[in-house]
Every structure is written in structure tokens, then in C-alpha cells.
Image (cartoon, helix red, strand yellow):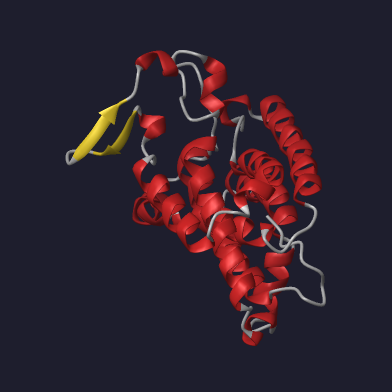
Length: 255
């Protein structure tokens, strides 16, 4: 989730965008925990109001991570490290709160996407970046409903995919969730790999045309700081939220 360019050449604007997404993520998870874990009725209206905008948060994370790939020389290493962290999150959530276990969340996806990109980076480099960006965005839109069982959008045009694809548990991680698969955070390879690669092509365009100087400047230092530490915040924020809400609700009876 972090930009891996050197400190000297770090694109602070991307960190600040990531920082905004982190703040939105934390606020969303506060409302989510209040509504679905602690069942606090007064939080329901706010939760219903923000649900339509929630997809913007992971879309921002995935796009920025893809963009940063074009500026990083250690994508495979980043992917492997992130994969290890993801397995740790799965283990902890399965032990502490199995009903909210994360089997293939956004960190799992990003780790696999980074590894795939590092392995395909050379052949992908031969694709014109603008064409690659357009193709990837089109495929992301067309394939967005693969986890729901079809390609396209109802009621305009859609192709139902074979039901057999959704009967094998291992295929759930690819984008064909079986009926017995459950993950409180779920970002399968399809369709999100197209969004990630779209970000990678956008990064190549930015790199070829030259990054504007203003993007290297810290326009908002607090957001820049949050964006630089997005991974740490992601790992610790949910336990902190649940702990604080538990103290407020069950110990001090604040609400």
C-alpha cells in the first residue's frame, strides 16, 4: 500500500491521496463496527448513507499501488513481504474473531497483484501504456460482476458464467466464490487485477511524460504522513476501533 520510490524522489501527492483514503477507511470501519458488531442503532442511518461510496476507498488504494509499481524496482520483494503480512492477518482474525475472518482481503490481493506484475513486467512493457490503460479499465468494468456469476451489467447485457466455476472453494480467491466461502474483506483477483494493471499503465504514462514538480511537494503534511504509514494504520486500526468501542459501550456505558 506504500509508495516505494526513494524519499528524495517520492511523489508526495500520491501519499496524500492515500492518506485521504486511509482516513475514509478508518471512518467507514468505525461506522461498520458500530452498526454490525455492536449493533448501535443510532449509527445505522450514517452507515446506510456511506455504503454507496465505500468502493471508492479500495479503488483508490489499488490504483495508487498500481501506479507506484512503475516507479519501484522491488515489486517482487514488496509482494512477498505483503503476502506474509496478509497470512498473519488471516491467522489472527481466524483465531480472535472467526466470524469476521479475513481470508482474502485487499492486502492479500495487493500482494498477489505485485507478484504477478513483477513476473509479467517485461512483456507488459511492450504494450503502449495508453492502450493498456484503456483496455484494463474496460475489462475492469466488464468483469466487475464476475464474483456475482456473470460478465457485463444487468439488464443491458450480461453473460452468465458456468455455475461449476463457483463450486470449487479454491477458485473463490480468483473471483468465483463458492457457497461455503466467507471473508469479511474480499478482493479477488478478478476483476481487481485489471484495475491494478490499469494503475500500472497510468504510472508508465506519468513516468514517460514526466511527473509535474508540484506532485513532489507536500501540499498537506498530515495527509502525507498518514499516506506513508498506510500499511501500519491498516493493520492496527480495526483492533483499536473495536477496543475503544468495547470500552465505551460495555465498560463505561457511554452509548
